[in-house]
Length: 170
Image (cartoon, rainbow, N blue to C red):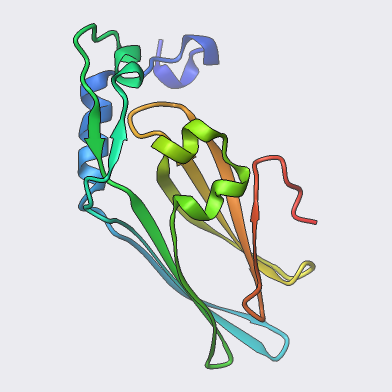
């Protein structure tokens, strides 16, 4: 049976080696977006860059690594990630900041504040009805499925707000 046709509870899970390979490759991957959105007389230019800080500043305790069935697991030393966002409205810079895990502390439990980083970052688009740009993130502990989705919205004036996974963007 093909993996895609299996019931969700029977889907093959990635193994340790494959997950480690993906994690290590992510250190040298830079994701960039440069796009412009027009809303009436406003021309919003969005530049986003998601990248690894190469800081070796994040230690994932061995208890998370032992979940892979490794009785002799060690702490996993890894890197933090950041997402630099610049928003220009009609040539004026209204937002220019590097977003890190600490920006999400208001929506994170203590263990995520200690061990998580931005595992993914994505520009979701612009809500003309709400008047803001939407960015989504996975704030997770590397090499695990422990984490939360969270979002950042930025309006035309550069005002930003962090949302947890249950937010309805109202």
